[in-house]
Length: 633
Image (cartoon, rainbow, N blue to C red; front, side, top):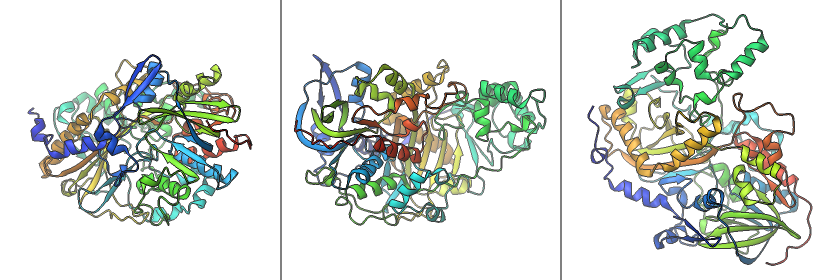
């Protein structure tokens, strides 16, 4: 095997340096001395981060995005190193509400606060990133001519799961999910003539081979299985597995069957009851990297079968994997358009006359996000390090631009992930702290590669491919969503975002789920932008190069959306008990304390946009009816 050099892969191209510099943002370094922390930035990065600078527009930044450099260092100093943040500057700003986190839940909390306390309420939203939206990150490309939008994180609206509260929320912003569905021709890469497909790479399997019409959820034929480059014994085990039609647990009762399937991992089920060899089981390992963010070994057989992974035919059930209907509604930038609607509603001067019909194309003035005369202010690049109750409400301390500042407020909502809250609020009870720490976030990656055209993929007849041996478990073309005023037809062969989707595999010695998640998180943080660039260039060279794709000329931009703290923790058979109502960790964790309430999808133990909105509504409803004025600091 002759591996391409970095130069042959195009790593020398100007795009690399340009993308890396644009994506760096605030490079915050915490030097903890004498119980204090100093924050430094370079002159160039200060220029890039100044909200008042003309042209500041984070959605166009490429390189390392998501949890970008500068967004997490202060929080890591607090949570990992026990840094102290003493003697903040006491500002003279007065607020009715301070929200920690300007993601979907934080923005929804500000909306509900206005509904409860009035449009004149003084609200400050603080976010550690250089853009609003949290995981609903907008990726905007202009390198190929016309603007191309893509996913940066949270992207589906699972409208069939909406509560009445969320339905009312969508109505308030004019969001018609059924109308959005009519303007979509996108199915995550399952609609090309020869899709779905699986690519086996030479590094892992000894050969570069694309096998069309290969979906592990479908009833594979012996002819398709024979194309899979694993051992002959592995292929024979797959043929036997997909050919069986008997109930291997017929001697067990329904409750006994459920108990067994809940106590065994899905890979062990495939080994013990499906008869698969190790190299055959490996094909399934990363199957839910994008949708769940975890390895299959973290799922029980019960959880995996409930998600319609193969195996029910071993339990006397009919083969029923016809392709799961998942009729989610999407904008062309994922749920970033929902965020933009909320920002436009809270700060109309930033983006006047924005509606669901034009939101994807609307212009947003980031320089006007934090204007003193406006009732709602949104402050980026501001990492909160402390929140505590006071006699008149609460105080919130944050690091911004190398300084520590403290603001006073009547109410505060923590719309940040749960595991950092014990460090922000040391006065919480030990029981609540333990509950907050229980939920470990699930890492996630969405790497967008803007390619010049789809010619090579069109020749292959695929637009979505599983890659069981690579860093990203799946890639798919992102087009065919014509909502928010944006149009990118499914048959457009011009510049398009090729989304590399997945997580990072933990080491084999990480046994329990939380150890797996923490190990995956650290591996993700240790990867540089160059590591990701080299990976996608290698994959595209080996996969599409034979069809004429030139990695030196046909890659126009690369954006890595890195989310070490991605999906909310959801309880799973193998790792979590059945909690009595009101006693689950997330229910204990989200309890309000004084003038401070807690929102975000962690508080619902479910990684969905509608859950984040529901939890924002609950958090605002739990705030006390304070009327006392907040004294100046």
